[in-house]
Length: 355
Figure 1: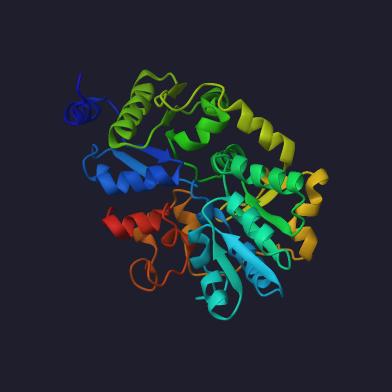
Figure 2: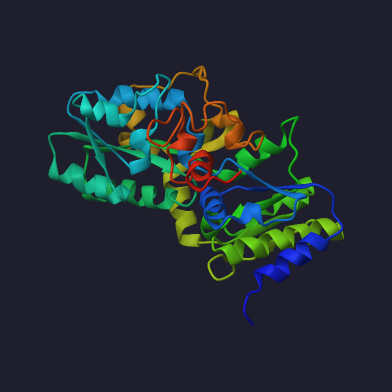
């Protein structure tokens, strides 16, 4: 049977519900929703909010400042994914891309293993990989650390900005102005932690939760299931992405994470410091910890900024609600990370002009 989007939308519109706010947690969902124009065809009473699911976006400016300092260290090659090069620190226009223009050695890599290979080719340099992401990318970062240890690549180190989703959602729900009726849970993260990783949402908070894929059909199906749960008054966890997500997740990837990392307190843009939300290297891998190797620490004080990205990724503000959006802040000259990242809510709204 073919998928009938029009029929599902009609069914959604006929559901006996008042105003409903649903949050997509994943940045890939945010971009897919904007690209498809889905917001413009949903029932008027259904509003979609973007959550803290873009790794680059949730990285606070004070951590970027510390990385910018590291980039200027002698004999250091700083490696990262492409988005990170354009994220500004607390000073407008100051980014890794600018530091590269000033002479810093900054390289884009497509996987953490590429950084290990770069270190092998340049034994006279210290190669640092900026590990940014959630549970989805963390296993690949763990694999790079294990490879460096096994091969004796001593000039490789990791600056971990890796974070986990559950503590952030708990912190979001705990905020006084929290007003989300259900969560579209991230399919990518769920491939690693399993759909069960989101069971706490209905069981502890009474909030509907559906794990969804990234095609328009996937997203629309997941949204319908969330609305149906609200009508029935029975919040539960549903896996609408079974072709990629199992209930238990990827056990091998989970073991790799447990071997390399331990939970630690970390800072999130918009949410502040959250206990147990970051992934730091275990003591046995401390020789590969860039922060220990270079003795550079991020400031504990949030950097002042006119950018309202923190409110956008907490669902309090639409991208267009920021006074800088499309004026002072554009993809060509971004003020905040939400306009930089390929998964950023502001970048998606600007590119597709979605409200």
